Amino acid sequence: MSKNSKVLNLRDKISGNEADLSLGNLTEVPVRELALFPKATVVDLSCNNIISLPPEFCSLTHLVKVDLSKNQLTCLPDDLGNLVNLQHLDLYNNKLTVLPVSFSQLRSLKWLDLKDNPLEAGLAKAAGDCLDEKQCKQCASKVLQHMRALQDEVDRAREKRLLKEKELERKKEAKQREREAREKEARKREKAEEKEKRRKEYNAQMAALAAQEQQKKKNEEKKKKNGQAAGDKKVVVESAPKPRHSLIGLMFKLLLLLLLGLVGVATACRMTDLQKEDVCVPVNVAVDDGLTWARRQEVVVRQLVQNLSSAAKEFLESTQTSKN
Image (cartoon, rainbow, N blue to C red; front, side, top):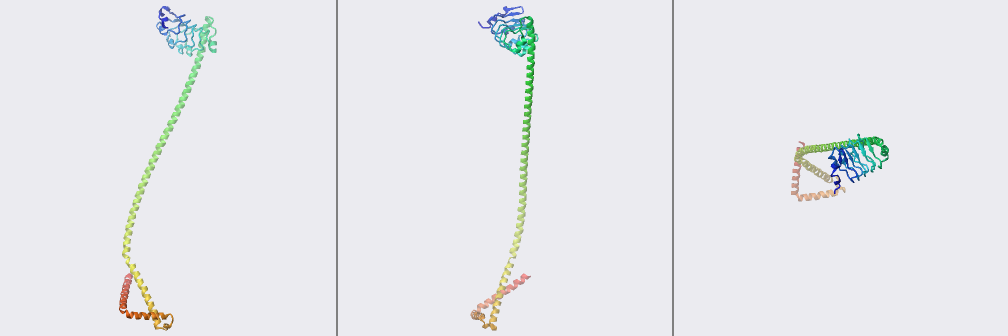
């Protein structure tokens, strides 16, 4: 027999608006079957072995009275507050320590029994003894107040958490904007550097072109100067023979002076009283030897005289030409 076989005949356990599922050795609540009978607003699940209620149990919003006493419940579903029509809840003799925060939303709850549960101190103080009807009603009222206070604390904690999350988000967004601003500034700086680089390259190109133009002008001027120098050199070359003639004339002048000097010395040594001096003796000897040799070489002398005459004539002509 399956574990749900004990509730297959749930219709047989319903009488009017009550469903009696107590003492059935149940380990879980037949939520699906109970949902099929919305008129069964009173459910008795006491004296079973139920450990927990499934989340789907909170969808049974038609329930008005629920008895879960004498089970093994250790916790209740977080959305228990959805049972907005619940007025009577018996949780006697379970293993509950706390109630879900949504318990504060059970605004219709008028009766509550939490005896024989290991409740935490604050909740146990609010629940009280619940020894009679009046105390159970007070238990419902005080527990709801306690849970509303816890709900407020939870709400404040959640609000504080939300504020903190918003602050963190704001800081995160601020950091994001700051990072984007830095990135934007970096991109702007890169663009400026790139523009400056292109500007320098452009200036370098312009400077190179200007240098080329200047060098071209210098080369043209140099060519012009070289052309003028070539013309001047040609004039110098054409006028070069004149200094050559002047140099030859100077040599002839020196040679003529030397001959005249020699003739003067020889005449002095031959015609004056100096011929007896020791200085004139070798001169006279040289003159005698020369005369002897000249007689022998009369033809040669004549030719030499003619050459000297021609040279003297040319010298005189070139002198007169240079003066003109």
